[in-house]
Length: 354
Length: 178
Image 1 (cartoon, each protein chain N blue to C red):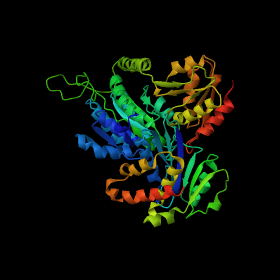
Image 2 (cartoon, helix red, strand yellow):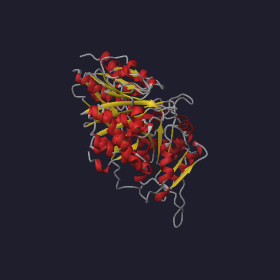
Image 3 (cartoon, rainbow over the protein chains, first blue to last red):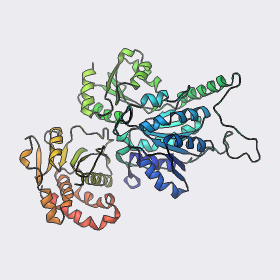
Image 4 (cartoon, each protein chain N blue to C red):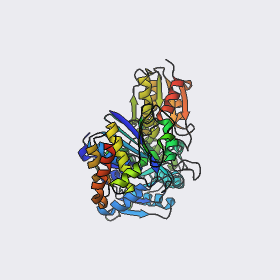
């Protein structure tokens, strides 16, 4: 690695730096642990590049400020956690209905309720299945290292613009607080296309435009919904991201995302050192889910062990993706605990059959 | 190479600072590193710890279950982490606050040093963390002692850079005793 150009940053700071380098000039948010390093960084550094940091009066206000800014076509983001993300769900639904691109970061808290501030993956369902009303999806990205937090923040803006969707970066306190050397590369593209036909930029010299999610005329609503679904189909066809490791000869395949996947990587190397043929599938996009990859590998006949820091959420999508749901075992830890590599290894050894 | 260490003590003893310092030293040597602080309702006088992993290869888990070495600055941390140390692992123990006799295991590589007293000899009690890091680095070779000393420039806020020489003396003091 080229030590010279790397910076040593907290995961939260890596997200904020990446956002600014990706051309994001607007941040609206309300503080909550464990993601406060993001607004802190934005408050300090956005003004230096002519951007606007605004602490809103609530999460509901911030997500609606996001909606307004996104309608003008600028790169805009917010970040929150647990209860704050719950408050934003109505806004997520409106952003989906209005087809507006933006980025939201959820550094999850242990729930339910006020819960605790340490690492958890209890928000998978809320992120992937939708916590707001209506038939919509977010693009959900699940980084597992500091560098990936940085890279996927940039990618998140690009995907949001490509599909006119809200992208969610889903992390937790491990990812937010860990410090690692990061390559702070700068993307070439730092703004969406200024000629997009829907941007609200002032109607001087052209017909006014309307961004809305209300469709009352006969047949209009159905047409709008089919168009949204067509976008999600294209998203699933073109932009699934997944990492696989040691799956060629695997008798047991661990499926895990985010910080759990990173812990499991060590468990898998420990298992390999003991001669166990164990592999890993790590969904990087949680929506769209890497259904095809999991299905294909499942036809090799391996058993699956889905590992999550919750009591069983992504495992449902894994069971839908594999050839035989009976292949899939689950190891979960609820909010309040983080497993060590050795604990996952013990479960791998228990589940493994040669 | 792969090396991991957990550093633990009272909030205010500076275990987070030496964790950061070790990470910066590893970066100076071109290695991969993760620094994971304990996270919760941390406060001065409470307990704090951090896990640092240094490796040439890609680092998997930043969460360390069975560390290869420990820096233990106070009694609660010894009780919590001693059982988790790998057999033969290095335990740098602050015997100013915890007598070496309180160690329960005999399969460890124990480096018991009166860190507070040694720090006072250098000029300030608060340097106990630097004495401990000097001892750990000299004992294990995770990074070169010089890299750790140079990394003070990266890890310390510039307004404290006038303190770099005395911190380096404290690290030398620890390194000389192992």
